[in-house]
View 1 (spheres, rainbow, N blue to C red):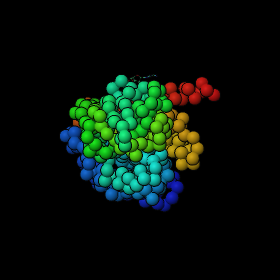
View 2: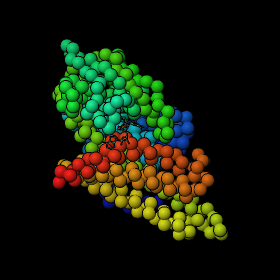
View 3: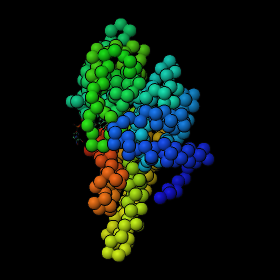
Length: 380
Ligand SMILES: Cc1cc2nc3c(=O)[nH]c(=O)nc-3n(C[C@H](O)[C@H](O)[C@H](O)COP(=O)(O)OP(=O)(O)OC[C@H]3O[C@@H](n4cnc5c(N)ncnc54)[C@H](O)[C@@H]3O)c2cc1C
């Protein structure tokens, strides 16, 4: 279905047209094969970068396109509908550029054009084997030694762990709790950084995640972002933006599932009529269409707050929660609409359903989003 969008500028319309054309040409035909082979689409991401779609929300002086977040998210939504792993990679990469873009020194920001342009790919290393939802309990240590920090510990579930060119490492430079956490920017080539074997995931096979062992890795002290003790603030601020990216991915994925299910239900005949004409099925598709529109509206409303420089953490949590729960429901229902055909890999909906699950987990599980929202309600 064509989505009727109100965009702020003609340039934004052109960008969405470009994204759609690129998604149809470069993403859609390749997704199934790469997912099947579990192959990371590095070249596809370079193509996306060269088309200018990797750094959309960042300043032009840093190699970005200075687009409002609401435009960036709609581009992401379109790409997610063709290949979630690529959209998720863009979302994670955008998140990985955020600490330097927002909190970096002028010297550190000189790295941004290569980062944002897509020549370099980023990873965001917050989670640990023992510290997932409770990120403030992280234990990866960084000890100052002359002109460097010596980093030791293990990060878990890191998207791009084995393929990234740079890492944001959230590590402990001080005492317990959030105030003891700092953020370092490390190059892939740093001795002592050892990405481990990829996890065998339920979906997103072309986007491998892995643990990273830090074995006394020396990261230059001038790669400390925002000062010692700023790490947790940086991490949470980045996640507010990142959650909107995940919400947009969820909307795109759900729209793709609905479009496929509707196409199938209009063709498939049972009892002498198209199955979409059975009210039980048609109403289910109507609910899905409504929920997708609601999730898109919620996500874009949060993005517009961000674009206006207003607080948006709470609205980002709501958007992430609603959009990803919605995507799980809609993709599961899409499988049901196809009946037996929904359960086999000949149709993409079984993949969409597997992929939707991870969106409820990453960048703060949906329980954590509920925690953020309920705490705000309790505070009044
Ligand atoms: C494919 C994939 C990619 C990822 N990519 C990255 C990445 O690039 N960088 C990165 O840093 N991390 C990444 N993650 C990690 C992800 O952010 C964590 O998995 C997530 O934050 C949850 O942490 P956990 O897995 O340790 O679960 P846990 O924190 O152990 O949670 C287990 C369960 O307990 C629930 N729970 C925990 N605390 C509470 C509470 N207070 N109230 C209610 N329920 C609670 C959780 O919601 C969950 O259901 C990725 C994960 C996956 C699966």
